[in-house]
Length: 267
Image (cartoon, rainbow, N blue to C red; front, top):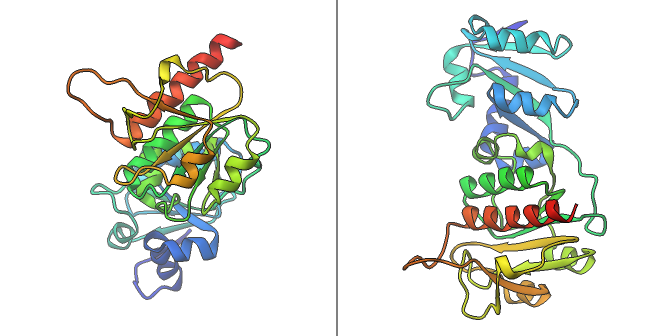
């Protein structure tokens, strides 16, 4: 095991760029996983870890020490606590980081059965929550437009809680191309996150069985007109009282799990 204490170390500089730069992650095709839970979710895919990084006190954590024993072939480097803290944006460092290759995808729009089309959603917490819901509801793919937040950033990874590794994720996707080639119906809400006076049917009156996709826009602008036109049906989420809309992540979860409920009844 190597021990690194200097900020001038080339490996540290490389990792620091990965932790902070979308461009660097895309060019390298790699990202960092921060913490035991994310690493466990990744290991379930049976893909290899490229490098493990721990802080000075990591080996005192019995859970972490047990986890390390499951990866005897992964290169291991220990950083000083100060250097490790620079790589992690957690207030209380987890003690372990894993360098991984960003997974390749295996599902095309024509093969997908239950997916999301995300247009220009830029809040990391919202995108991470959406991915977590998509994984829980059984989606096979998520397509993100080029103006969405970097899906492999630390904040999105943390918010998704491992959801990345249960999905095929396409960044900078041509959503109109996806919509054209998807073998099912595409549903959209006209307003970003809830009720729409122009939607003729609410979500719970909509037949979501069979192959379906939801097109979701950002909270400010909603969906582009082109993507609205490509959708087969506009739907709304019925609201009670004076509430007019939901947070985009909450609205997406409602849509996804209603579709999952209908699919389960069909089967």
